[in-house]
Image 1 (cartoon, one colour):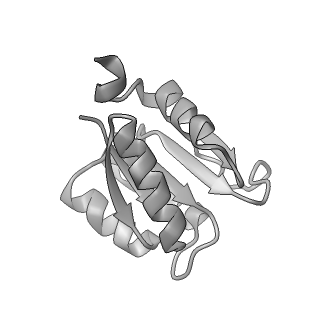
Image 2 (tube, one colour):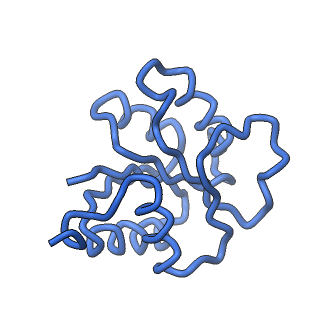
Length: 123
């Protein structure tokens, strides 16, 4: 099962996204901020990272930059979730952006574009 690390400081949104990904056949792992996300990446590399931009301790931009510095993170698919347009940010090393608010269908479609369908969806 494809593992997706979901990073967001909004607990309700984090839980909703994880539940949606699980129903879509993925194995979601959650982190409440960028620091926690980096610890989880060190424990077990996910197939994709889905991160919010505006978070305490470490922004989504800083998280992306830190992941890209890891040898195993150079090719890791990254999706930003943001209510602001991150398109002109100098650290634009992500694969896709989900503008907030987004539909759960758009979430699953964007994930599938990058890493393929979840296990449940393939059956």
